[in-house]
Length: 395
Image (cartoon, rainbow, N blue to C red; front, side):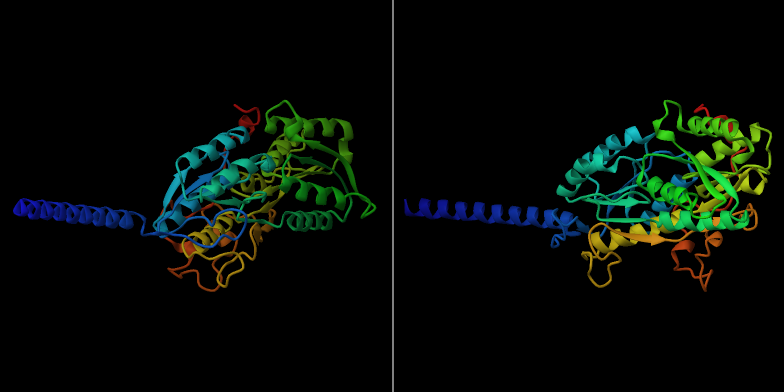
């Protein structure tokens, strides 16, 4: 009896030892799986986004036919590949699909979401909160910043619009009457309001005539811009000297309307847009009525955003910490572009980075972000779309 009891005790001890070893093994495996993720102190009403060595970043834009969105997404791919992160393509077609794209990335449990320019950001606050509660960082690239967005990168849109209006006004001796095409976005309000204000009783011969909103039309937005321009040309005739648009897509549409009116080179009516890129640069280079754009550094916006993501979600920094580029949650990092005219429009084959003088003092620096070899090829100025006019109807 005593021997049997001792034997049973030995068996029990062996089972306990085996169980302990198995538990230790499972714990070690789990630790290996989560070793790159740590907790950090919250800096707003949400948990601090996950801090990991290798991130999975979902990027959303709503129109991959746009030069600006293509530039942003290609730079995001470069950033992820260079940093050893996983890039998740969340691109969609149209603003109506953005909410579903955000939900999809949340369901994929990405570590960070970068949202490109879209409208109705206030309507996305609940989705952003859902992502943040799960530890997903949420960032706005050239987009409005609302509650829950950790950081934004953009253009100082009102400043840029003012710079362009000063250039146009000075070129035409402050003797123009103009109309403005806008949309329902924050950047549109910043740009359009400044342009209208500059033409409203500031200079006696620099006059504001009309405004139309492309989002308020039942037509495809490019077709709406085309028809607004046509209507103004018929209504105001030679009095209409300028059509200012808050985006180059509208500008190219308006330029086509001016061309169809018989003013092929903008001798009576000039058009201005904002954005930059191959298509609009071609319009300017070809001496169409589209004479001005404000070229934006979309790659720089994106690089600045990924630097912030690295600081918050790899280094574990909080806004306001030394070494963090943002001072508080929702802070925006602004970059400057340039007013582009026939005098400085980039040549086909030139580096887009050279256009914006990103190179600084050392264009050959192999460690500089504009020379990273990973991801899509670095952007080169191309000749632009041969037949943009066919896209105006939404075909």
